Amino acid sequence: MQEESGGHELAYQEARRGLDDQERVVSEMRARAGALIAAAAITTSFFGAQAIGDDGVSAAAWLAILCFIGVGFCVLAVLWPRRDWEFDLNPQRFIATYLEPEEGEPLELWLIHRDLALHMGASADKNRRQLRVLMIAFRAGAILIILEVIGWVAALNRRDVD
Image (cartoon, rainbow, N blue to C red; front, side):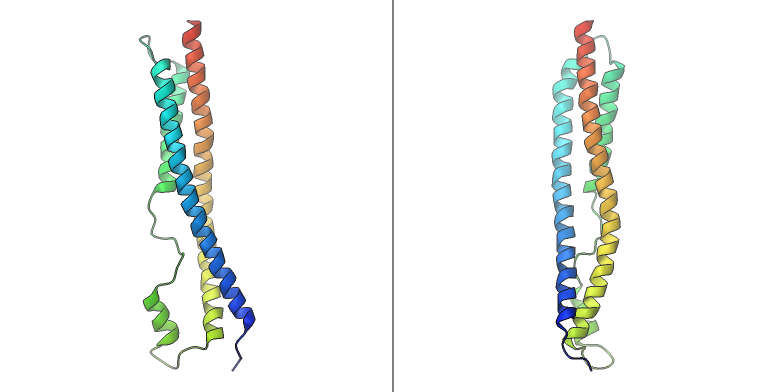
């Protein structure tokens, strides 16, 4: 049997830290998405009331409205609850697999560290793919809010010219 390996423990700690970092990034992105939709709503209510007049809705105002709707969809993509994140280990599964297996003796600590590090690495890879999608949605929302502001400003300038 192999003796306790500090390398396996280090791999486990790094894998755990990586999952903790990913979980923090998801939480921060969701908070930022909430701020993004709040900014879009304030922008729409402030500029929209001034830009939309009795003479109808201009093309620039329609652009701004469509961008606001787009921001809403992007934020929804970020905030939508998902059950497929893998940030932790099920305690029952941990006990059944490592401490009280149906067959054989409990695993040695270095083997537990090794196996958990490998499993957490796979979870981090899966989470990383999902994070990319959320980041794309958030970036799209940020671009759309810029276009929304440009649309509202153009609509306001059009009203001032007319």
